[in-house]
Length: 118
Image (cartoon, rainbow, N blue to C red; front, side, top):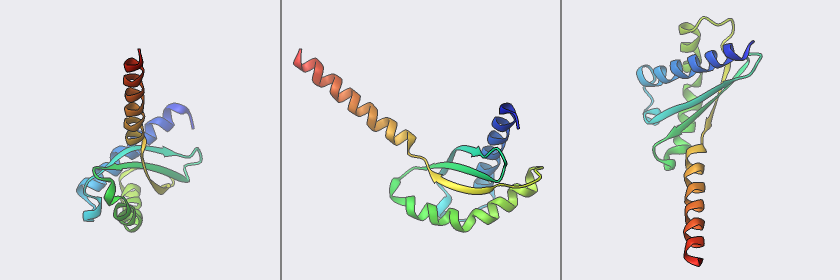
């Protein structure tokens, strides 16, 4: 599958999973989840679904919510998208934004410390 087609498929999966979570899934644990990115393997067997939540303290319950809702989400994907095979969904908590904010704070504090030493 070409790179363009993979990007388009990833984008379509992200959009559709987000819509399913918003309109179809009634699990309260998944109410404040944001899908950040989807990466499908080249053979279309598996898809990593990266998500974030508003508060880190709910991470465990969100993972449990995804574990129970995953078959339903996959079934809805199969009905909504015209794919030969619907990939297995693997939901992964995305810490990129939090890590970037922490790194930015470290850089800023080091910059302030260097300016104070001048």
